[in-house]
Length: 325
Ligand code: FDA
Image (cartoon, rainbow, N blue to C red; front, side, top):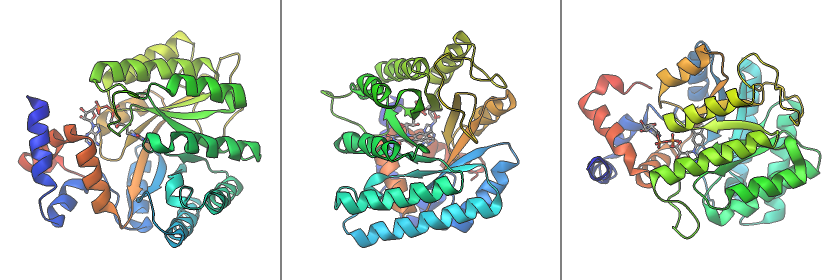
């Protein structure tokens, strides 16, 4: 019933004028420019948050577009450094052109990862749909091979393959792996992915356990209590927690600007009270900050891909005071 209502709200919202979509999504998108993102990060820094910054945009059709992302991420690195933010980058390999011209795309990624490394910054490769899972993992492995270990990948709990991906990655780079684990935003086909809520949660939690047991760094990106509570229990079981040096005998290298083997991550505008509670308990909690000219496309995609967001849209309409950026 709630699902059907949510879908209806989303179906109506995506037909609304751009200003309306902008009003609903202002809570989830920092703005159009890096200056907008900087303002949001200044505000959230006072809450003890750290950040990962995403320049909105995905699959591109020309290598000139890849150049735009390269230049914009350089500006992001400058802004992080100038403002002394505790922040990392989130990039999408397709936005750098790996599907159009692999060699040039890899060069683009390598140059941004090198620049980030020079500034002591971490780069997360966001995970897109299953067509690029292999490529994205390979980009991360290639960077490690080149000695650029400030790069980590995202795995999606809903995909059947994720547990064996963890196994393969562990064979190749051991606990140097640095993961973000999430349920996965893309509604993937049922022959490669779980499609129901509980199996997705269970599979995501199994990935969290496997990642923790591999000694890797684990960033748990979820706002869902069954995932967060499972993580808290899994950490406790392994003697891990706030202000405790990572006690795992197989734990990876010490990582600057990171938590003791794990952290939580949440999207801008989503479940702030829960994030602040985790921070108050001493956990490291990172906020994903998307910004860019493509805010409209991003918002529409999120709405279409995850129609359960409809209830949030409805809440924003009937209780507009809750729709704070
Ligand atoms: P769930 O969807 O059940 O959400 C739990 C509750 O949180 C909801 O009931 C709602 O109240 C709230 N909520 C969640 N998402 C919301 C939203 N967008 N707006 C408003 N309320 C919301 N996916 C992917 O495929 N590749 C990736 O690289 C990433 N990267 C990423 C980074 C970070 C930091 C996060 C937090 C998430 C991602 N994701 C992602 C998205 C992820 O896969 C997943 O789709 C969402 O986090 C929603 O799943 P939850 O585990 O939060 O549960």
